[in-house]
Length: 179
Image (cartoon, rainbow, N blue to C red; front, side, top):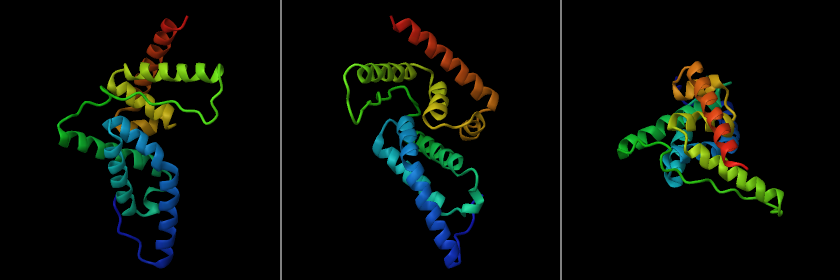
């Protein structure tokens, strides 16, 4: 799948624009994803940087139509390599709760929304690691079941089952916690 770097000036310019757009659009979601996998924002940034270095070796035509999926797959594999190297393949077991911030804090509804968001995030932390991963890929990053399947190497049916089971558990847990 890896191709040689572009040779002509037009190819270099086209590739540069593609890389800039792709980085601008996907570096933040990739960093969030890698941080959730690794539990360490600094290491996550390193993994994302490695991912974009690998992207630089690709021709835009080689990954046209599935660049985001390619990025998340490479990022996931690199994060798993880092975790294996560290001997700590414990995904999502000790994750930090993501902080909810608002640009314009308002009393009442914004506080309730923040509490609900924090509650749901804490409930996601209680899901099994494989369910956490597919839920985050689906709802935080907007991937389809098929894309999640390719990123995680699970079958589409398994992805659907994991998401269905996770959402059912989250609904039940949320209903039990809310008055």
